[in-house]
Image (cartoon, rainbow, N blue to C red; front, side):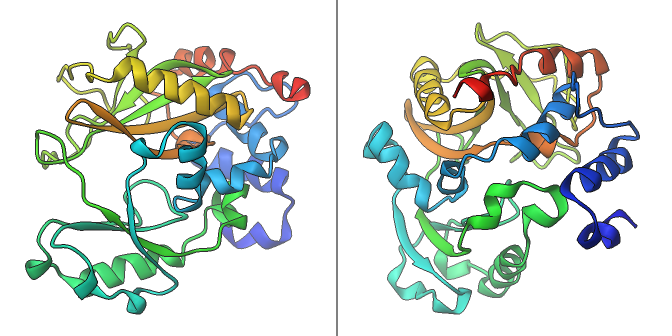
Length: 289
């Protein structure tokens, strides 16, 4: 019902209704306290045009090379306006295909062996991703300005044969904790999310998915990734941003930048942590930037 009314509602009214629909709570925008509430406030009020290039998975690579180094940028093998433009003969045996405007694994296809690769399945997934838009449903406004494309990226893997991503949550320019999904590639029926503080101790809260029973060792390049995350958070000039990295053979590689983690619409297992994380977001910083 809320989605059907979307074209006729202001962004604020829509977010109020959608927030209630998702979380069964009233959204307080004039004096937000919770993490989930402050993210909705940021969607409405933090409109830095530089964020558009930062969420573009193709365009952001030049930004990362300029701010940090080309060495941490995973190389692009080709960019395409349409799936049918891809020349698979020109690609190596292993590669990754992505859409440049979508989040999570929605627009990602991994090819470890080109000769057994299901092109039809990849086409279906990526063309579906090309049709998605994070703005109408979630009001994540930067994606509205991204020209949608598909790109091929160099295949990377760590010692497990997969690629763990480390999501650094930056509050007011400083990393407060790291979010990981330790069993994404283990075939678990339900994924688990874990959160580690800056001393690499597990934190006692969960968002969207339960915590795991696994302790994930701290990555070798953790301190360097923290440094890079805070450099990028300073460039983003916003009180909340998530910076993702991978690690291969002890070396960090940039993943992506997210301005509205979980879109502020996922349920906290412990509601007191929704308030605590919200208290870490200083919205007044936007007035000082």
